[in-house]
Image 1 (tube, rainbow, N blue to C red):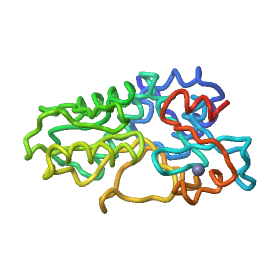
Image 2: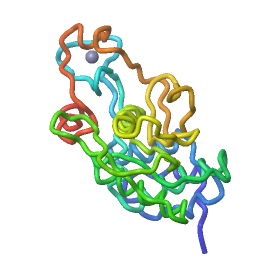
Image 3: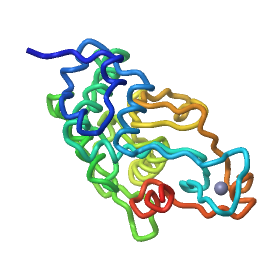
Length: 245
Ligand SMILES: [Zn+2]
């Protein structure tokens, strides 16, 4: 018998180990709130905030991805690394997708091979879509850019999955470099989103965790860069380690 886990019960867990009673069935009656996803990730040590955002200093580093700086970050890989939590998260994303787009046809799920965890999440989503749905992954070239070397018919209907919106824009650019007329589903999936809610080419995306209070800046206008705070890319383990200390 499946035991449903309420928000109250989940928010009462005190350690990572307590999460091991959870399965995707634990939440089969509901969609988890951003607050609950944030709390799970907090227990996985996957949440970082700049120590004193009102007083930027060179003593503390901040996060930067591409040309955008952040004063907070949710490192979803810290949770996706656990099969159990990944299954919960992908089940939730898939159900949100189907709530909004019940009969949307999808041939391919495209994600990046930059992290094993997001590839496995892509496989989960493909399995739930079923039929002939296949996973495709972009690769990272020696310059750090995403490239697509797979073959795809132009009629293939593509759903994108990323850790954050930056991944989606990079992967989309890589696909279009090979197939300029590539069509995309009228929705995308991202694990986390920080800063104000936005869209991808005017099309909304579905996210597990939105952190609207995280401040983002173009690096040329970043108050942390201005005082000499070092930057680290939080997507990679060394960068994350440098931020978290
Ligand atoms: Zn900066």
